[in-house]
Length: 427
Ligand code: PLP
Image (tube, rainbow, N blue to C red; front, side):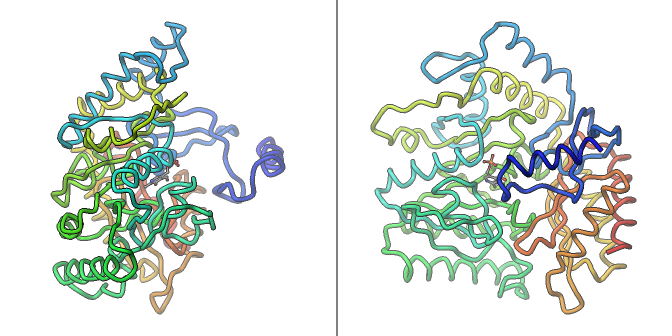
């Protein structure tokens, strides 16, 4: 089979730590709407959307046209040495959508670079290498971001200059404060944050960085208001707050355009990537102007904000706003959450169903409530066998993650629920 040969070549030439799904990984050859077709001709409903990069579905004419018109100019390069009109327009749009006063935007090629940049700004601004992050976090795979990632499966011992302290708050289901109600939980996390600042740092912490809903960590869902309470403490100590919106941005959580807005917090900086380019490589930072301008030297990004990516990204943002995909994410997200909660009542192997909008996690457990990664793997494979691609993740690899394109239809949501019901029977 052609894909077996391709897999052998992949293994020979790519690093062994480059994660691949499925014993027989698929090669996606074409895509349309919410469906992808592999080289063998099998079509799948895509409920992981290229790790949430595909915000608005595949093969959208408005996006292809925008990219094509840029290609037609012959200008594919950028470098930030010259003016790029669609890049400036995109920055204006993101600055406005961010709600951050006097916001400025810097474009990168990925979420990792976006977070590295935000950390560089905060550590420069506060002249401190100390950073607070959440346990179970994932922020990328370069020097600073790998150092602050609080998830064993995705961290590596990087000799990073960053000093990090991790606090409770993200992963409630397996937190020592799990049994508490929302108010008590928030108080316990805030007390922990204060104690961490007072006892594990020298007091001059640069920033806290957090995902409003942890993505790689298993679509965890802290109670609304947690980050408001955190921010009040951070303000007391003069610590900056960076919201990592790489997964939670662009309306995916349904309720709000940015995940952090559920907590009534305006961060000092937000980082974004994934859905922005609907698959094109683009990320960035939006920050208060004074924070963005803190670097006292020239810098460039050779590829960041290149005109092909910014053309596609601008068309993507316009599309998702024009079609109010945030509202669709809210509506179909609650239908999926409802259907999955009914499924959980019938199947004790499901310990938790959580999430917001089209960012839903299903945590699989054993008889004593222990993590059950085997059940999640079974559901991943059984779903694929029935034509549905889903994601897997969580600290223990026991969470199935659902994040379809935000153009999902009701019929597709029902189809996925039907497949998942059959797959869970096998777990
Ligand atoms: N931040 C979050 C919350 C992520 O989920 C990811 C990637 O999964 C990143 C940062 C890193 O983004 P990238 O893979 O584009 O470097």
